[in-house]
Length: 172
Image (cartoon, rainbow, N blue to C red; front, side, top):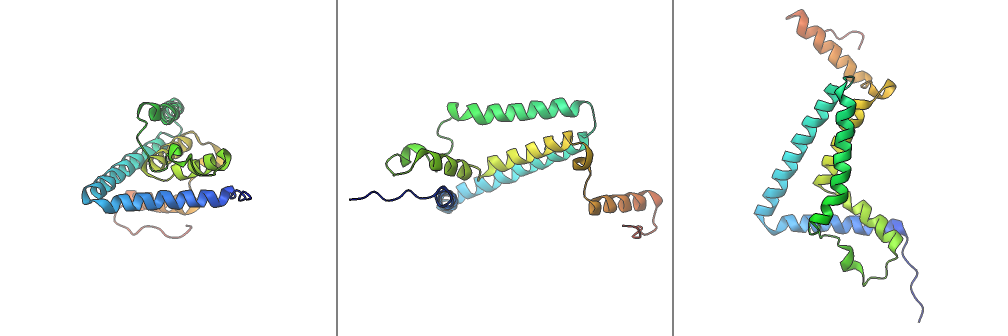
């Protein structure tokens, strides 16, 4: 009897991602209360994240932007590192202790679990906050908005402050 060759990490990662998405979808189908709570928490998290993203963008170039960005990233890192120790049953969708009996090597399993754990409301919220912190500290070409946005902003400001004349469209 020969042992089967271990699956490559990329296929294991795609299996774990599909498993996580199907577990989320089936969990939302179970009850309308759970679906409502998920949607409400997603909307609330995205509104808060969007507000903080805009706040960080508006803080760009000011003195407290750097200290606030560093403080936020430090709090996020500590929270992601230590809160699972105090609340271990937070996300049991892909619990590694349930996968012990499967013939999976630790390296590919860890990378697959890492990628699968990036799906959800919390990681999206964290991504928005870290993006805002990075934009607050950006200098040079990274701090400049895209050309189409600068054009729209310039045209809107010119129209807004000149009065009822139509907004200028040339030169954009």
